[in-house]
Image 1 (cartoon, rainbow, N blue to C red):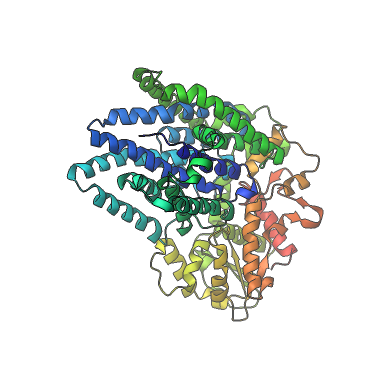
Image 2 (cartoon, rainbow, N blue to C red):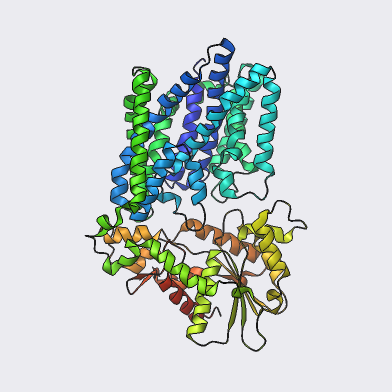
Length: 625
């Protein structure tokens, strides 16, 4: 295949936004779409190579996978092994245990599956996962375990274009028709991402890069560049993704590749600076995530501006060295096949063993914490977070046992119905515990109604809702609790694709003289990381309250703002209540997430047993009830 410098320039357009987005530079709010561009490029290049070799009669699966190993393994395992000492130094024992799991997943090219299974309310924030970005490698390698066999079969039966087109259309339908699919599954899993790789492959299969578009080349390339620019600078974490918006970066990359003779391809993407960045793009992508994560953790959750700049500069420096002294020698075949395969087996076995040890030893918690000053900073919390979860679950089981959804008793007093996700469960247990301690006649009930299900409250059909939403919406709409409640509280972790659905809940829940309260989400940087940083003496502030105030999750605050705006838009801003007020005094810029040496939150947003008592007291002190 003839080398195209503009493809390396397009790689630069893919990797730079990803790096700058993860480094926290707000201008590149949609930088994550660089991954989608990479998928298109990969699909195009790899398919071109495989197809030409099959047509020439010299395709070999051994040679193909040898090329994949030479391309992927050397720099990948250097990054994994270099991350180990920094993980030991900076990660909490629980995080180090998770890091061990991700080492195993990287080796088995199943990172996307691991991170999908970990996604949910108790997952660590992405800025605390050094190997999170390897999910894209997993998607690619899973694809290339299947695609060469399919392409060979298509060419053998002689219906290559027809069968390929059918595969692409089926993949597109699967990706965009599944209305009730789990967003995390859509983001991480191959069956929702395959169409992006197939889009690139289509350029090769239908020889679109060989077509003469006459005077349209420049127009196509311009449209492609505008689509990528739109994706990078207009989209954000608030944009539903993957979604129909995914077409913008994919189509943009597609158009630029097929218009290879354009001015943009020759003079902009073919620019030496962009090409040089594109050449080191794989190493840039590999190094950027762990470096940025370690900087964030070192600074207690989020690196300051200069820290982020330093992280990016270090990433570029290491990537340059990696390309010239690790990638190039292996890809240039200066190292023979025996060493490549032997080294690959050794790296795989070593990584599997180390990852298993870190997991089995629970991040060596006792050894690493025994000399730390953890007593006054939540030592019990640090040493045994799993026991905190078990203790919490034991308390929860006393209140959430089926009786939480029984009908309200007759009589005076407030009748409070709390709906939502795990934050609502926390709310319910806190209020219930308070009423028992204070012999209150207030009655409180709980029903689960996830924010992802709210959109079905306004629909006449539950098609595509999934089993959980079908059950939760049905329970809510058919329960007598709503009509007999005097107060209805809704509390969830608002997400970018659900905050607008709050109006569906308002329409369904208001009326009947009920007091309706919609709560925003509240979250801080992972408290395990904060506690570990404080105990190790890395980040010991003079004013803990102000320090904690600076650890509020800004991305959650943005979603809260959308909920507030939606309610204001219908003239009902008073329905919104700020959950942060239970922990923070805005006027003094102080937050309290630790009391008498006990942490109130165990993962940044869910309550510990001590937090249950604290939050229950605050609910009534703030006169929410």
